[in-house]
Image 1: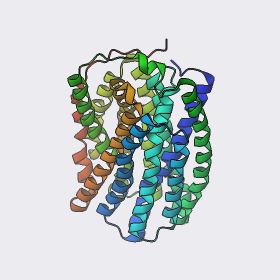
Image 2: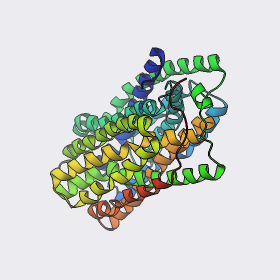
Image 3: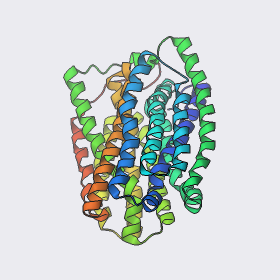
Length: 397
């Protein structure tokens, strides 16, 4: 099943590209952690604090932005949000102390707080009913951007130093132009329909009781905790783990991180297609719990198998995100912006909290012990059993 209409498909691809560029800028931050740690004499706790500030600015603002845009849509807000990201990139390239680093990553987080709920809504409007696939294409851009960020850092920033981050301002300017184009299409949709929800949203009904909806949301919260805490550890500390345990260089560790993040992008598109085909509940169940055996073995392997298992875990676990988001928006189809913002925000917030906690644990114990501890988190995927089956139509009429 494909998203409907050539115009809608082109918008969906543009949204994915905008997501790619935005999340590439986001991934620059953890990619230069080893450089910042050495240059400014940071502790692992301070490294975790940088992630916490960046992701909390996103997590706290995203549901508020989504709620506001459900009531008062602002199509050109996407481009405005990218202006915050551009400012943060420029400031990060010139940061001279820890406090300025925190300010710069906070601005980048503010940019993402606007992009994610609004772009997710645009992707749903352009889906033609294939909501899982459309959400996966949108999120694929973000995951691919997070994968290529470390690669660009390894090739450009590591050889030239922190000031080379300023080069990311060029694609940021292009992204502002791209999001303005999307804003025009978004505005035309609002003028044509007079509402934010597509006809597919209006036709879908789950027929669940309020108690069942609340139970489902609580289960999704537990699943997000499991997924985001575990992937936060890998995304933010895999480079340190490879350097400490196997003696890799900073540049070589970036290539390992690139492979892991690229695998998450591949898993994401597979999960979206499988969710539309077989049901999003079963994709959620298989992806999180299914990654547990690989996660449990990973901390006890040699270098080659560590890389292989990190790729497998990334691919399997990432397939849950689009399924979780589509499942959640099907629970409350009239609040797509708020739900999208809340779940993207929750993902960033949990990742930031996890990063700070694991940074503290690494200071107190070691990176290797942190990896051994977090390996048990995917076992929480067993709670997906309690998700109710949603009786909704995913096909266009």
